[in-house]
Image (cartoon, rainbow, N blue to C red):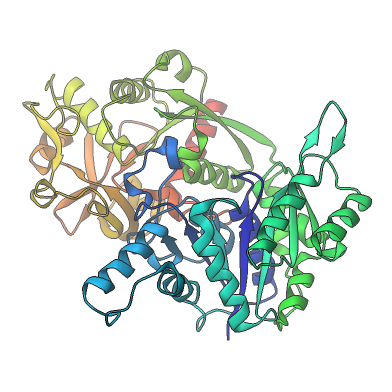
Amino acid sequence: MSKFIIITGGVVSSLGKGISGASIGKLLQLHGLKVNMIKCDPYINVDPGTMSPYQHGEVFVTVDGAEADLDLGHYERFLDVEMTKGNTNTAGSIYQTVIEKERRGEYLGATVQVIPHITNEIKKRFCAFEKDFDVSIIEIGGTVGDIESLPFLEAARQLIQEKGPQNVINVHVTLIPYIAVAQELKTKPSQHSVNKLRELGIQPSMLICRTEKPLAAKLKDKLSLFCSVPAQNVIECADAKSIYEVPRNFYKQHVDERVIELLGLKPKHKVDEKWFSFFDKALSPSKTVKIAIAGKYSELQDAYKSVNEALRHAGMNNDAKVQIVYINTEKDDVVAKLKEVDGVLIPGGFGVRGIEGKIETIRYARENKLPFLGICVGMQCAVIEAARHLCGLAKANSTEFDPKTPDPVVDLTPQQKNVVYKGGTMRLGNYTADLEKGSLARKLYGKDQIVERHRHRYELNPDYVKQLRDVGLKVTGWHEGVLPEIVEREDHPYFIAGQFHPEFGSRPQRPHPLFDGLVKASLKKKEGK
């Protein structure tokens, strides 16, 4: 039977519940245990697919096409376990399921209520993987005290009661703020947070204390006393230079041993420390390289979380620190900023804002031999740029940006033109692509066929493929011979773009080939080779 760890948060949001949960999961995994993670978000949206990055940050996409919270990206990168639709749940999706059952008459005339109907559906999703994994780690979004989180916390309380505290524990992530004027760390906000959690019937077994200063023993003792948590289970979680240092910080404090003892787990072996030693070297590189991310959310780094991490993974593989330079293609002088970097990437996005700046960015990269990687709309902009400046189609565009363009080099497929509902109707999740022999894509991947995750509506219009090839922009990847997946240039040191999102498949010890290629080419550019 699977054991469960419920991760909750208090005081403020964005404390790093996902990183904390994934770090605990990694330590258990290093003991040989099978670990899976589930995210529960209390908002009413069915998924984050229709939400602005300003509201939600990046939308992560699972292999089977679920649009999910960015924490699932952390889960995948730490555990190297591919997430699916079962790993992501929202209040909206849960209420939708319950209401659909009620409409079908499945509750046999009962009054449908939060307890037991909503909480039963939540518990069902908590237990979705219990037959396949030794430990299921369940992260409940938001903070204790949020009204929308109450059904999830009640379901967690019921799960603890039903399966027993020896099978289900709560790990509470909380803030220990530093008051600079008093030069003191304060425990009171955490005490109040735990008290609120206990009012709801949940006693935490462990506290993860986010702090910018070391947590002295006397403060741990104080938290232990007032929160009824053993002092050895009060864990300091100071800010780290890299998120990949957090598992080791927890390991030094014996978090894995505490969790194993609390849950009565039977580890297969002692922790394999090779994972730690990899990062000792990877986080102390001998070289640096500057790579620009050119998009419209330059002030919101969470919008490009997986892209940022994929660049860092490629840097680790090339003994280089990747210094990311954010370019706002809507507001910045893109040419001036591009003169300061060794490579450039255009990430995915939606809407017309910043598009002309992206096209200008690509033209500069093409003409000045600056290594370039385009992702999703980055590929579409590369197509528009070539059509306008090389094919002579001055008004070429995507119908997303100009519905009346005379040359729709990027357009909706006939199926997408009939879509009414926006949520969950894009081309989502894994699709195959066949790679052209002799292409850069074939060389980078080292295989004839690839599988990548998608999240988009618009496609390169096949009617323009020949014109683009005649001016040097070749389609070198096709999905089932119908939909163009990759474009590249031969007259350039590194110019490649894909309709998919390669960042979602990157791992610290297995960087994605397209990102690895960009970093390698950017280092050569910097070294003048």
